[in-house]
Length: 381
Ligand code: GMT
Image 1: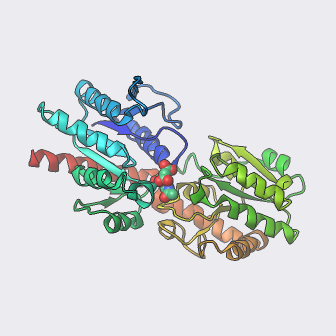
Image 2: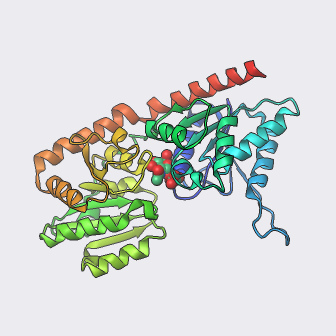
Image 3: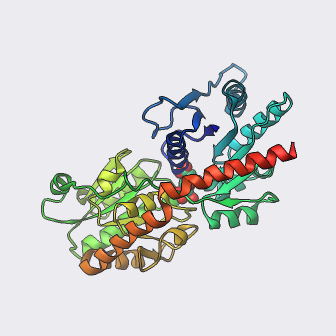
């Protein structure tokens, strides 16, 4: 099949999922056309049957806000016509689904059928999508898509609860390449960071308020207060990074923390981790937690959103009540001080990643879904 994929190219789970999906589909002999504002950060090379088409956004003295959505639509039309796309798969509803539906309708008026599959990822439904300035368009574009998927059952339920959606929604969970994401020998790195054999806690996020980065610091500070020999590595960047640094200084733990900023080879950092913390206020899936699990790292996370579909409480990690820093501290301490418990959970975390979320199990679900959507939309045409 010839598949158009649109996503946010910058740091973020939906872009990662879209890019890894495109790469995996290309390996299965599909022709993939990424259509985006810049090259997706996980797309290291464009070769063979992978193409990248940059959306050219025009400025004009009248435009206080250049209309990216329309430029994207025009690019989708252009690529669909010239590459002969069989399906357009857009990730994150705003504004990608609206652009794709408009492009599809324009193509239809010229006799070309390119069905649209929209994948809902997170805040497009749980937060920003519910704002009155977006909600009617989100509702319309979900209902007008030829196929809709959500990354968890929770997200599917949230969509029906908050939007007047009549379209069906298929749950296709996120996935992980367990060959790439596996524990590697990074002893030299561990030694450099933890010369006295300290344990390592890792948190990876885009440091938006929903990630509750301050609770990671607070949990860490409580563990250090008990003199637990432990270091904290923070990966990623965003608006709450500077406040997190301030909190670390205020709590006197800054010197035991490494703020690494945005990093691509996350699996190398996860390879020296003992516990991964995810105290998010909302999380539809928690891809960063899955990456940790694949690297044998048990996750201590908030009991919210889609996280219980990923983390089996007491087996592959722990789920704690939202904002309960005491519970986070207690569960993390247990994992850092009880070797048997840690060994059992890290093996179970890896096993769950392999058995349930391996890329080889999920990518065929998308292929089958594209086929179903194509046949259905052809029949309706
Ligand atoms: O919805 C967002 O906040 C952005 C999105 C992203 O691009 O990072 O994150 C969501 O999609 C990821 C991939 O499907 C999920 O793993 C994240 O849990 C989800 N984020 C939230 O729900 C906060």
